[in-house]
Image (tube, rainbow, N blue to C red; front, side):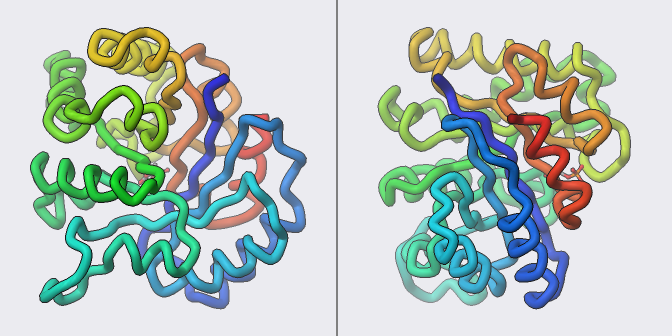
Length: 256
Ligand code: PEP
């Protein structure tokens, strides 16, 4: 059975103290999760040690600390960057790669994302690989080719075993991120089915059925249940609504 995942992307928000309070509140109020369900808290680098320590102290095997970025090189003169081994040292299990904000503000291109993905897979880390089209592409109905190209360029060189072991895909239409405009259930299901058909054509149906595909973009307590009820939506990557326990917990409940 493929995993259900709700991942919170805190972006560059919350003080360390507020982050620790949030993770402790989530830990103490987390509903009991079905065996296949996981929650990942993707914090700023400065918060990871404290957040993962809180998680480890609970021995909650389905709750994880995640990072929002990493570098592909193991070490060296890369001022301002953080390596995968450094993330592992502070208890990180998963890393977001290819978020549209990193693609846009930091000019991360297909090749850099491919190298980061390879380095994470080699380190046996879980990759939350983001894809999704801008509004202008959706308006000309070009979203399927756009997303197919993102996946082909940075992800589909992996082998089936690596895909199955390490990859979760997050479909995040850029026009829905932080805008309050959510993809309709039809739009989400249509794109997720498209992604699964690309996975099937490239890696075979068995692998395609095993890979979780999350929806991200203004997902909240009011719309999570109907989005997660779509056949090919296996959970969500949550930005704004992940910053408060009262808005994040109902989304976790919607996955259960
Ligand atoms: C995100 O940036 O990954 C995201 C989904 O943000 P929001 O939920 O705020 O739209």
